Length: 193
Image 1 (spheres, one colour):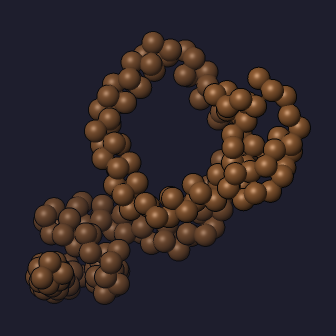
Image 2 (cartoon, one colour):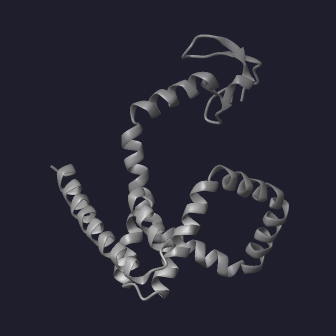
């Protein structure tokens, strides 16, 4: 193998030091004929050009190897149980402050959503404990995140103390849910043409 200090890129024609070329053992001088910058540019252009087919290929490959990777991963974890546990303990210990900070940031950023979800879960449990039909409760809470009006009905039911008023609210709520389910079915059918 010949030792050289500079080389001319066959792609861009610039003369550069060898450190700007990838190693290539099959080449006489031990380095690639194109510089790293040209290779990166070519790979980027190629990726952009074939992005969709690459995504599709990767998706198919991921799906076709999913089970074998799962089996292999499970076998590795069982064979190296102590090693894996030690790794996770160390990771958690080393990254405790970082994880706490990420959790705090997430909570601060999504405080209103988290509060609303918690409130809705509490009301959902209250409804189930109040002998409201479980199927109706499930149908209602399928729509609470998407439809603000449903949340208003649910909160109204929660604040109301009179059982007859609560029943009336539930009847109104069931009618609205029926309409929304029909709306969703029509919306799905229309989106498929």
